[in-house]
Length: 141
Image (cartoon, rainbow, N blue to C red; front, side, top):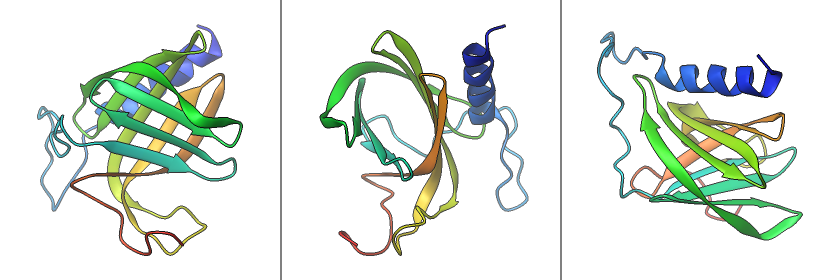
């Protein structure tokens, strides 16, 4: 199996791995901590990137892609997280959002989710938040 496909499959499985919360194993229960109407933002540094998802629309932004490139995403929920897939520039993009305290390493913000993106043969690690589950800390560090 080609490496990008293996990486995408691994990321999808990570979003579907059962998580333990307060000693309760939700195995068999679909992740429902993020409502479909919530706007999801995933972001990372080194290199800087941002993926904003609203409904079935994703916008991928980097310093070289201003103001960002829109594409269609499909949402899927696993046992331990939420995933999104789409095609950007003819390449598959897979994003996962899993619960966990996260720091972007550049600000004093704390994020409620860990984010991972596979795109163009690269893996991007970062943090995430939603409109109903925001980050804490300064708005503009």
